[in-house]
Image (cartoon, rainbow, N blue to C red; front, side, top):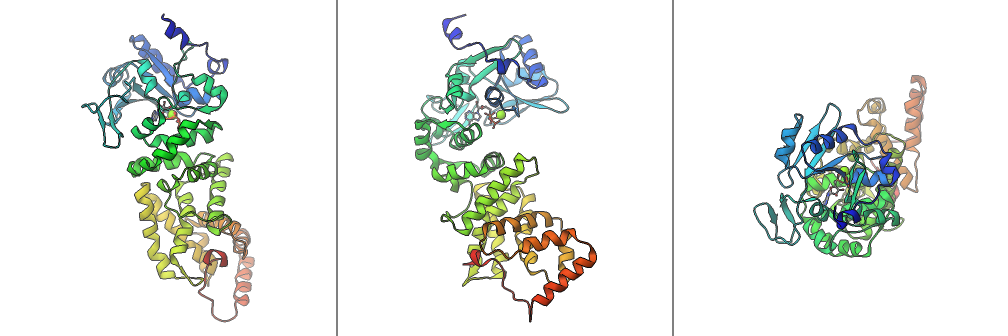
Length: 426
Ligand code: ATP
Ligand code: MG
């Protein structure tokens, strides 16, 4: 073994040795090594285990080519074009196995490396060795390779030291690395929040300088990244960081609302609510969060002189979704969901005739009611409509009839078509 290898193979911390990595990933590493290939766990699973977090997915990296990997594992398939790799699966697990790649920063376009005029890598399928594979990874803490069958750790970029110091450091010049792949800006913010790590000065600068290149990323990839950033227990934190770096607008089609405004308070309430739901293992959907984040835009576009123009409200719903769609490809199934939440806000407020009974059975009632509570939380002029619905859901039929009667009696004359909280309409 050369000195270089010794230097990069420290004794693995005990926490890594004691970790229960996924059985399938260990089987895969054993099989690859038996076929005379190198193979390691890499990326998030090694990083998260080292900071004492539960790893959620397991990536394996090897010098076997996709075709060689495919031949070793019966249950596997080669995927991807821009970035070819192999999915190996069992009944309840799927492991991504990727081939070591060469560093491509200094290469011009070839048939296997394709860059666009901004320097963005469009295809990256040049195989390399382990050292080269490290270099193409984004951050030092994501470039730790661990062989759990022999407890060997490879650390070429001081990843262990950076984990101890709790700092995110780029591999190579982040100005170039973020040009090659602008999504790295978002990843830097996401990891710093998730791990509670500082972001190195160079990375901060690169986000400021190269963040605008996110405009070139496909809306499908940005929707994936939207979900990772906002459905992660760190939505509130990430929202604020994205805003301070000036790159929130590549993920959310929102105006910047002033401190203490209704718009900002609602967005904050929705983000904090998402974080709390994840922490208490309640279900979450990107649809709900998108509906909340875009609500101020919808209301702003629809209100005039303190009143909501209802026909404009319904017409504008599609427009607001379409504009968001240009940033992040929202799957179709969420479009109806978002519009239901929005339009139910009107019905939850008016509660005309027998409608409240119907609304209770609406498949989106629960989401719309939760959203109403958030709007009330954000508004200073509460009307306690949320409390009314909280009670109406719980009580028996005679009390329901009574509640509706009280409501009718309280409304003298024709029901006003006015809708919304004073504050959101001002
Ligand atoms: P998590 O799964 O928690 O989001 P992760 O680090 O595992 O974090 P993945 O997207 O699963 O992230 O990628 C696995 C590894 O592949 C990363 O740790 C990193 O080494 C490398 N990688 C992923 N995306 C990029 C990228 N855009 N640029 C450079 N390296 C990347
Ligand atoms: Mg991962």
